[in-house]
Length: 264
Length: 365
Ligand SMILES: Nc1ncnc2c1ncn2[C@@H]1O[C@H](COP(=O)(O)OP(=O)(O)OP(=O)(O)O)[C@@H](O)[C@H]1O
Ligand SMILES: [Mg+2]
Image (cartoon, each protein chain N blue to C red):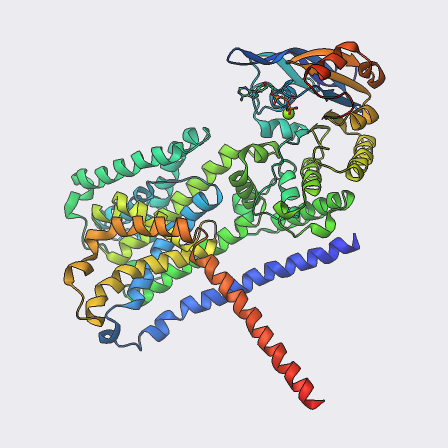
């Protein structure tokens, strides 16, 4: 909440992560302004997921700073960062086993609720009230994503595409200011990808800022206001989607890794 | 929105169902002493009420441990120490200070266990992995050595005898019949508390972190805090069980808090069903009856060699075998098997009823 005049929501400064000798992320700096959608692309192993881990506190950078809303979040626990309003999804889907779809979403509301051990154990009225609110809020999110009919099925029983949506629902449940999505379209069919595109636009119009890692160029180029390209842990290009697409360095990075420019 | 209101109703109904099952189970348990007294002792060679009371005492510990192992995914190899702290608190206080109320001793034991488990759990559960198992292994050993060697206060291997009975609202709980009810009402209250907990925000956080710690953290759950709270809670439940154990036996010695008792608790959790609340109770009942059944075998089958029925020699071996067998063949425990057969029995009954009515219908035609 520092009043630095402009509307920088996330600021990453000279962030580096070394794994032994390998620099998975190397001196990366960028900012995300509130209200925008930023795309983060790069060939496999470029360091995109690692960068997400560093921003959201799952891993600690070897050096560098990360500010969210002006707050230095390096060294904070992931759950503290989530409560600040920055939430991520995972490239490898992590649906909670043994829990229903709605319960999965309700966990996402954890940081916005406070019922503790005793009030839930003794079923105090305020815990019931909060429980009902949590349930209804989560149900509304499921409705928005078209998952409401599956609310009471086991989360892990959903088809793959819907599991991706469920992860998004869980992230949305805590009313984030900023969402970090790690390959939200991976494994989706063209129709589902189309729907996801609309959904992301809607989330943006609700005032949520997005940082999206994606191999589906169609999707990224379509929704992003600006795109950052990462290769071998370093930013090799950034700018408007059209610019980046035609940048020879970007084309080379993708061709060099044997992946065409058009898809992941 | 309308649809989701309907769904809320469905959900509310499911909760009601849960309480209905709880009520049925409570009644089934609480009527045990009423019919058990009509079974002649020389027929079965065991005292059902007495063994059930002990099973209830173990249930307190096992319900707590089940929350820790089955829901939070952490293992404790030293819960016998908390059981001992509960028992010795009552034993020491009420024998040293005549007139000291045993229930206060139970509360003090719970508070001491709370403090110790917090001191041990807090730093250890910050780490990811199974460090708690190692730390509690040490704790259990220290506890046992303390109970045996601190002869000044624990009377060592001799143990503390003549522990005065518990008295509640002026009623002296001096018979197996009375202690049965004190124990099982406590168990049912702990069950109710745990049931509420598990389906609440707290329980969801636990189940989530059991499934994926990283995803739970990303969803906003402070996982090390939750693991610590569950560990402390399980220690407190276990200490309450230990306190009841002291006023049930009216005598304590270190053997009741040996490492094998920690393994006994884990066996009960696994046999009953990891992460199944009623499993904890079912596992405790089955395993507590096991020694009584084994020692009654020679009466039922006079040809059995006596050495086989000398249960004490084989406890750890037997628990070990049970743990392995259940982990391999029935990892969800007996409670789950019962649930499945119960619901398939209901379905089967419905099918038979449908068929009968179909038959009637065709006949009439
Ligand atoms: N824990 C780790 N230890 C060692 N090396 C790691 C670790 N995590 C990631 N790496 C390495 O860091 C590099 C970046 O990996 P990362 O998963 O961030 O790439 P990515 O851009 O997300 O790739 P993809 O598109 O395949 O998801 C890779 O070379 C990877 O092997
Ligand atoms: Mg990745």
